[in-house]
Image (tube, rainbow, N blue to C red; front, top):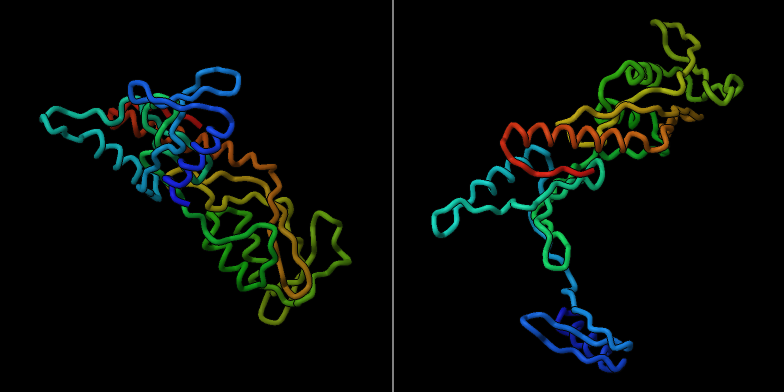
Length: 252
């Protein structure tokens, strides 16, 4: 439905409820059923079509905006009252100053594209091997997992040695020999889950295997990594803004 049609239906609904609308000094008001005067707010806040995928890209955009020149030749101030809002570890909004209704228009968005890895999902040996190398920062526990899944000898995980925390599997230990090894749990890993300009938060995961050389990684930190990631993004942005001489508030 087009905006004009929606506005027409809204007007009809108000009239049907006995509400009258009128305009004063460019603002539209209506009288509700109790006789109170209320201002009609615009139905939408302007949203920017500028979408970036890195924090540095967002900072470059800010620098360009801060150097905008007005028609009169004076330095324009498009960032006065603006702020950076960290919505989540993968999204940061550049919001403009408050409008007359106390709302902030979105001027730009920085959105990190996370690798296509699904936690709590079972992967075969080859898929997990590739994912561990492409979607996780190199850590000691990541290398141990790679060693286990890359040298599996049997397709069946030894369920008899599974105590609910650790599992025991057979891996190749030489040209013609095998060895029983325990799969460590919990493991500390650092997946790529936030902007690459900051350190990827480490957190605990549960690594499990089942028959068919299938394996999965389950999150086990209750989402605490999100708080750490937002704090790291905030710290990075504040430091960069200070060096650039831009006075913008960063909230998380």
